[in-house]
Length: 450
Image (cartoon, rainbow, N blue to C red):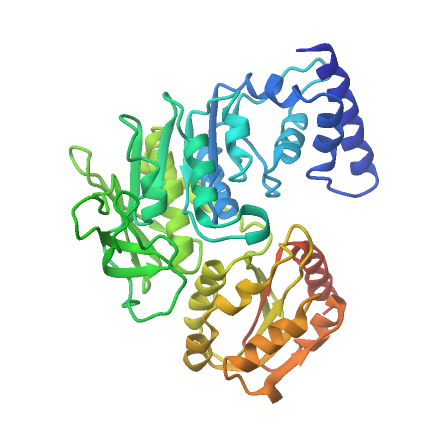
């Protein structure tokens, strides 16, 4: 390692130790401090890895990484950034936690969630074994711009030969990343739509052929622009997936078929996640595991190790039970609401919307959430709005036709436990990034004291 890298390593580890004895987690700060002093430290540590999978895309990175980690770590030690710190400093903090004072990496395999804008900066100096792209959707406009900017970053980050690309064939934008790759490209996708969604007014950013500009023709949508599509001019179409999935909502099983293998293995996995978007995350993780040679029996064995990351339909038991879910863009929010629709019991839905830097200052995406279709389909007893943009969310609900008498605005996050102690089966809390971890602590304390 470079001399400055040693000093950065020692300073970063000292910061990590200080945070630990003070009772704080510090998922990014040690990496931020170390990286300021030693800008090449991450490169020096990552190049010691023998195997590395990077999970990127707009939605589903944290859940998919956690599922894949459950498979891979069943009988082998793997590193992962479980806290979801997916920028340069978060990745470096993860590496610091597995390194010695001499700069030796103790764990030589890693499955890492990587931010879309960070990916090309990392792959410029380190080529992972495989890269998984979950989807390409509109995200924070003030950070990423429109989806063509995100697609350009992902294309740059996945262009290196020798790295396997596993991408969502049902998303025309994610699928396009594999068009000009001649080898080591694998697609996953659902073999049919779990429900008829053609009439849903979801945001569909990738509904045009990237080769000729013609509007794509869809046989069905699953969510957003994800579905079965083709260009009427014959330039572009959904590929036959290498890994196909069918989800049985009654048994809770995901049936996986490997279409391009001979013979075609077919196996069923009991799904530990809720919502069709999460079944995609499960299928994505299974696809990467199979590309890496993990057997179906090991996948079935490893799935029991999965733990829901913070805010990914995380359940807090109590009366009522509370479920915390991250929302950060319209497609993700619509997917969460569709999962909530499956609950036929009385419920309360809370939106906790902040507009700090990590959330995105621009909250215009709230108007693209398809609340107009959700609330008539769901038995929702009341609606609660909190966070710095609580009034914006309350206004959005009112314009969607929600009875204003059923909308309540809560000023402080600490008041949410008392505000949701009502006679319903479940309370769903849909939160942006910066409120997520404070809410996690508040809900844990609420369960402990309740």
